[in-house]
Image (cartoon, rainbow, N blue to C red; front, side, top):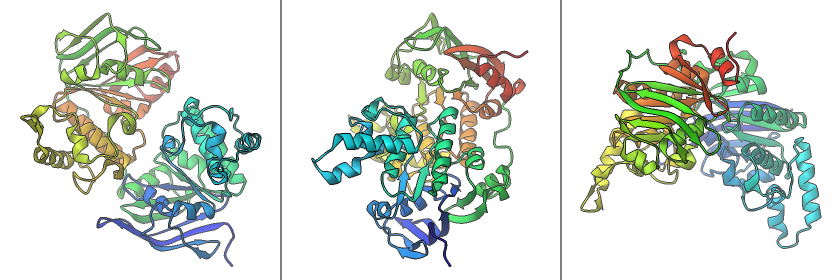
Length: 501
């Protein structure tokens, strides 16, 4: 006898342009369960859930609901069966100029046409938010909402239908710790209502905290499925990687040069930063530690000239300098890989070749004509050097995993030989295997003599990769420490405004 409220995917396979993304994958989700789906970037997690949510219609295999075969060949099919996806890029699914209520009940309003009972829409939107124990003004515009609120609005939209199964794709990637904990409360509430939740994430500690079942994919194949409690966090990572977990950080580099690449004193901005002073030397990785809201992103953008700031004194390559604009920074050999790479660092709907050549100097141009063949050859070189997993330079960046997109975001600066590289949360939304690749890449840039500023709230990364660490709190640098002499607990203490006893 088959249990009710049970969703099964059997021997699912799918290929794109001859590349096999999934091969005979099985996946089962029970109502009232929170099921972790994890694996390295490119393992097939999002592809499997795209099949389940109706985004791909050319898959092979079977999908069963309560033991009965069902056909899911479009998002409409999935929604009619009670299957809903909340994607990582929440802004893509929302209309910023409409209200909270309109976005929650968008499907209903589209079906009703021009006949809108606004009192009923506001009442129903409030009731759906109340199911999530969320209090948001339903008349507020989406563009005025925080990222965490937007995510909750999408959850309420899913509940506006007959939601039986909910897919959350990297839901905590853009959230801070408090917002993540609030999301966990919401997920537990949905679980108590009998809804089956798929929780896709690279953050093993989060999966252990919220999930009761686990499925691990690697290279498009199923490698593990069962109880979450059966495996330790280290064992899960080893299943993801396919080998034992060794030290993921490169060996310590030899002492860096005394040659100063960049120096700034007394930097202020108009909102948060106060009296920032720091020095970056040739061959050094300088860590910027801080919790959400401390000013890491503001500092990175100010140093790149992307926001207005003023300084008491600045020096770049031994010459007087003050951040003016991104174009001036690029011309002077300063590069930024921003935290929001999909919004600010890459063009997701353009090719790998275009993204890798967009920040290059004029070496691809002759007589005002762009040399596509040269750009193509350059892209092939960077793909090979950085180990970008792609079908080739012509592939659209949107089709790449987060880790491979980040490699392209870094690779675009290699042509113009930028020697001051600023990284803002470079491993955000990236799995452990891609992190290892990025650590090796960044370490290699420092060994070439480039100076790296590495801003992150992941304190283990800072102590494992950096030479020195400046700690930000409330827009100010409150400590400067040697990375090999400090631990994560001390960084956390300084980051919360405390000092060691």
